[in-house]
Image 1 (cartoon, rainbow over the protein chains, first blue to last red):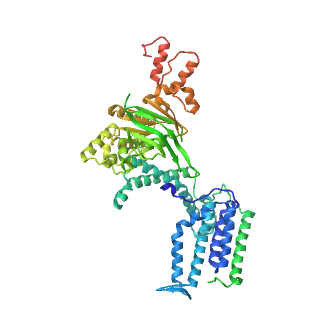
Image 2: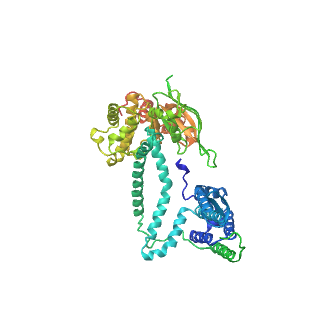
Image 3: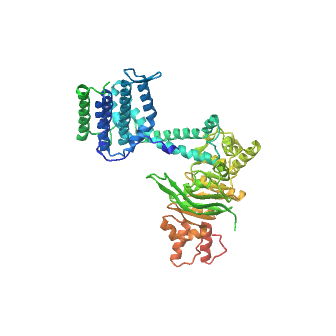
Amino acid sequence: MLKDITFGQYFPGDSVIHKLDPRMKLILIVAYIVLLFVADGLFSLLIGTLMLGVIYSMSKLPWKLVIKCIKPIMPIIIFTAVLNIFFVEGEPLFEWWIISVSKKGVLTAVLMCIRIICLIAGSSLLTYTTTPIALTDGLERLMKPLQKIKVPVHELSMMMTIALRFIPTLIDETQKIMAAQKARGADMESGNVIQKAKALIPILIPLFVSAFRRADELALAMECRCYHGGEGRTRMKQLKLTSLDWVAAAFITVGFAAVILMNKFGPEVFRL
Amino acid sequence: MAEIIVKTEGLRYIYSEGTPYEHAALDGVDIEIEKGSFVGVIGHTGSGKSTLIQHLNGLLRPSYGKVFIGGEDIWANPKDIRRFRFKVGLVFQYPEHQLFEETVYKDIAFGPKNMGLSENEINERVLEAAKLTGLTEDYLEKSPFELSGGEKRRVAIAGVLAMKPEVLILDEPTAGLDPKGREFILSEIKNYHERTGATIILVSHSMEDVARFASHVLIMNHSKAAMFGETREIFKKVDELCEIGLEVPQISRVFAKLREKGIEVPESVLTVAEAKEAVLNILGKGGKADA
């Protein structure tokens, strides 16, 4: 049950997308999301979709990963589609009883669905191709200006890194504790809600205790190595922007320009 | 021949079957353990020891093959699996990490309570288990979290002993303890073995401990039961064990070397006491072992 939880679903690889600087990837993904919402017609949105397709094939990830990340949000997509189809007013396409479906409604629904899918697939691409550690690293660097207004950027990113690091460890621990309590006859499957909740106590308490123990040990180990926060700290792996990153930035910029041009001069059909 | 209490038949367990990560943690294990024996299980990390013992009390369900406890197929009726968990007590590695109750008493009582015993019976069993593990009465009302590491482990083991399992399995019960603590836990297990006649399965990395306590040894290697037999017979096979990359008890090694040098020493020496005897015998001082 627990082993199905994937977090920071990184898929190792050495494609050009994997090699991009995490900072650039973060900025570009934000730019891409803005692009998706700037696009106001089917054709400009198709440019966005096409861009995503190109990037995906460059990342050499298996295509079924796209389906995997869309699946959990399918209910939201369907909900949005239904809402838009029935409740956006406009010239009716057909009417039946109290239900009226407008052309605009259908178009909005289609556009929204494409947007959501691209948005999720795009941001999943980020987590698929970037290790969680690189991601927090990139975030820290990007948020650095916030230090000026006393935001503890380094501490926040260190917390994130540690949290990410310990998720698999704690999952492992949970499984061990569950097995141990089951061996003592703990019954976790049967009973009503209250009994089931009670059955969690023998698992949660040892889990908390061990989480605190680990935190203590980690803090001690960090202090032993003279960790004193982010001030004056240098990095083993320096983030460096390469020409690859600028090519990627150029790609998104060109895409952005194409979308704006399509918005302005593209065919007038399928527009909102 | 004694009654067979634990039996596995063509036991295979495959992790993440049907995915690219598929790998067999157990690959055809057939063992028969006699009632009342003390089995030492030895093997490298990842050889399938832990997976095997988790099959014996039904925590893991075999992908193929069967597990019999006292002649019954434990998965004949999956709803009935808890019954076998009480019959086969399993003490995990670092069992002190599973403590959760407010008092030592309540924690030891967790297993018996799950068995649905009466208050009196629970009380009796808790006191008995505490006594077996050397926990005096004033421990029982303490919080398990204020005890020392070694004491916590004793509480955790008592929690399993209180279920009075017919088969007691321990996964490296002495890991991380100092020599005194190790000695205590081991003698406690031996004590339980002798007093109740229960079958013991002890997973250990220490050849010395296994040589000292176990009547039988099971060697796991590459997800298979590489060797299984009486302790003396197994430890005679110094070469085979070395091939698997396992150490034999120090004494066995010393005596194997002595034999190589042409000194006639018995093959089945396992402990220091026996070694002393054997050496004195050769020196012609047999019987006067007072040195």
